[in-house]
Image (cartoon, rainbow, N blue to C red; front, top):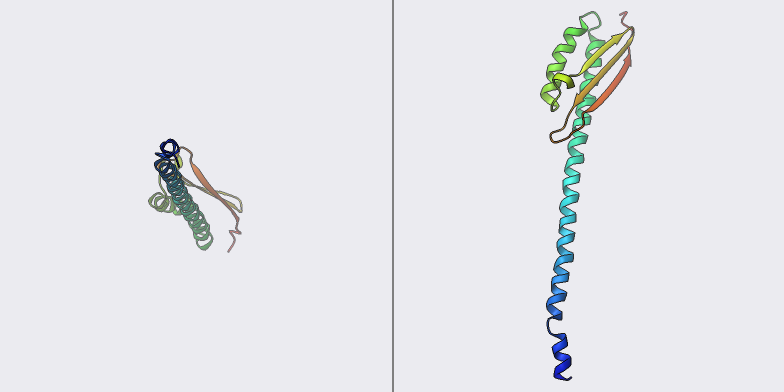
Length: 130
């Protein structure tokens, strides 16, 4: 091998190492991004399941206490919802509408850092004649 061909090869190992480090770093950044997305999705699923549970609970309360005042039950329940779901007060307060035998329960919440308000709607038909 001549000294000229050796000079052409100088620094090639360093360049390969830097390119390998770049590819490895991009992989690590991708994993961190996937982890952040997974945490966000799990949090959203938690809020959705809590909203479904709370709506079903309100319908159960109305069914179990058919002779009582529904607005009083709904007011107590709304306080519980605001303690469980984020930003579920004010304009995002849950609603309970009784129209004949149809009960419509809507639960709203806004996740921290989210711009959109999410909701869960549950409709049930109950016979109010015990």
